[in-house]
Image (tube, rainbow, N blue to C red; front, side, top):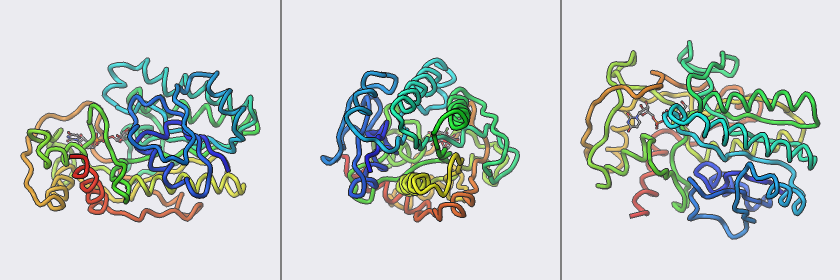
Length: 323
Ligand code: UFG
């Protein structure tokens, strides 16, 4: 089957492309603004362009018999979304609407959407299930939530089926060591710690030590990017078989780790000590975000293969390989 991967040169997109090739033909649409453009497998058909460009989408859907679209192309920094909300509504919602319009026009009816734990806002419970209220607290989370609602409406009006995957904290790198997590600027905890341990940063700033958690630092649910990638393929196969349609799934490990714990595991993996500065809270950070991924386990048989230490080991190998 031929699959269009929007944002297939980015962090999670490129790892999913790696899982797809071999069993599927892959067309990648990416504008290479934030992506890992250093890797695109030769088997992949690559189109450089923007998601909101109807002409390029017409070309792709006319030239290729696309069976499904995986949509990773989005801006995803919470802080930036607060400062520049129109960028988020324009790229994450506006451009996605163009993509969805073109899918409907060309009769492409299966869609796998990258959503986020940021759609939950500040949750009432420590373990988050999909039925909990979705009340995002920043433009990034709202932009993803809006698309989720648009998808529900489209599926009622048209021949169209979708799966929403709400990622918790994606991390780690591919087992080949060829691709991994890199953003510019980097804001994510694990790459920042590893860059510091490699001497590429002076220190690590911990954002907040007075949260209502055992050690006072925020707790997150870190999930290996390859586990995420595999979930997309399971979701697509289930949509194709018709065993599910129009579902929302959390994707996390179900275990929370504090910022201090993550630093400790990074130090252990790297065999070095970090210089840590304890600072103020970062705006918009909930104290604890941990997923229940029971639903995707029950319906699709998904379960994560990697825990925190393995995630960090894979990231460390990749970061070291880039020096
Ligand atoms: N943190 C620090 N210091 C840093 C960077 C991060 O202490 O230099 C802390 C953050 O405050 C947070 C934790 O480390 O408590 C994880 O932060 P990340 O920036 O790595 O990840 P977030 O949890 O903020 O964000 C991730 C995704 C978002 C998504 C969000 C859902 O990157 O796209 O999860 O909650 F919206």
